[in-house]
Image 1 (tube, rainbow, N blue to C red):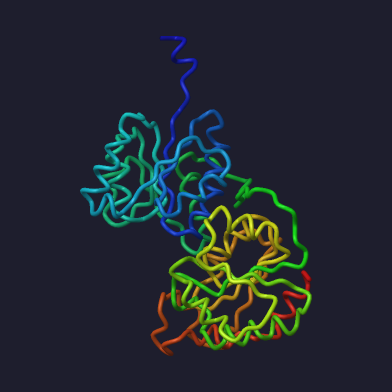
Image 2: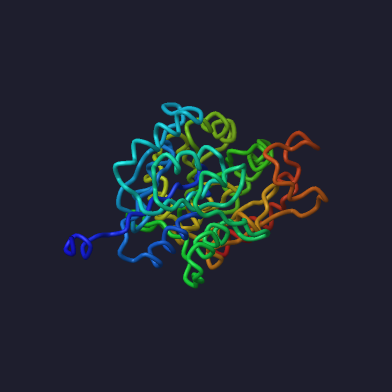
Length: 332
């Protein structure tokens, strides 16, 4: 028994967030848990669609992929959580605010279950804390750990480790997509920007990216565009996308998951903001970040997913093209 006690390693399970950008921001939380529990085994639960990103997060042991399609509703998440009971977790950290993620944690049978006290989840957790206001999402996640342990986390890094590839000093990645329509570049504005980029930076190779479901929008953007731009929409996995970004000189992007990917890889990232609030959800690493917003409308940032006032995001339309060109020229 004494030998078993001496060789025992604490087992920690972290339920990661549901959106790509939030998962990237939560890498600082994973790193902070590793600092606080240096000898522990750290496992994660992540949405199946985002599973490809986990291989780039340092310091993890096991990965449990969760599919809403295969485990729908509260009964589904309960059944999924029960499949992890045999792991006998000591500690479960719940980063999403949803009731379903708390049910999942409860079903795992973890001895301590820690999360923010939202959505009537208190009875499912052993330890709940108040979410601090007006913090960056990354610091918000870390505050959960600080409140639980009573210890301040001083070192916080949002970092992914992509495969190292040969750097291409003349390559720039473009991303005008976003899950939220209010953060996506309006089509006409996007076409105008692409034309201006090609004419301004004649020796630069532009690569435009997007998921499979964003491919139609990207195809429309490129209609009539001539030369020096390659369409990678729907052609890359998350790992391949990170490899592409890591080998590029800079990334010009809307407020989106890929913005966080690029920034976490240490690539200079220019982010075009409209509806989103950069104080809370901008990429975290300021040394490789440039935020551009028009700031001409009283309604921005509204943090809505759709533009109720104008139909299309006017806050994106009003961003100054010359400011974008000047920002990019610093890296080319």
